[in-house]
Image (cartoon, rainbow, N blue to C red):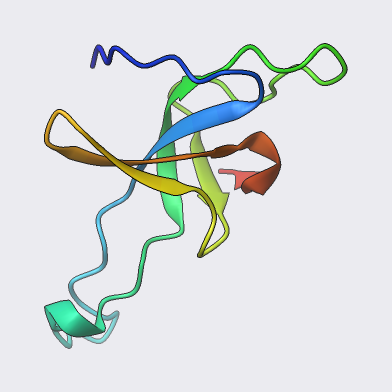
Length: 91
């Protein structure tokens, strides 16, 4: 996917994973009860700062905080842009 956006410094652009529609036991979750996903895929990453280079790369699946980042809508898709320090783990 080619996006015309390049995050600056230690910022990362993430495409959130789709929200769960069913529980493990098969119960369907209605739209108003779905939780915001906390997992996504890195779409673009900045170069990092001179003191700390960026550690994630495009294509990594990451976990991030529930309220981390700023929501963006680009070319009809939803994305989050956040600092690399808001990422909790690489899966």
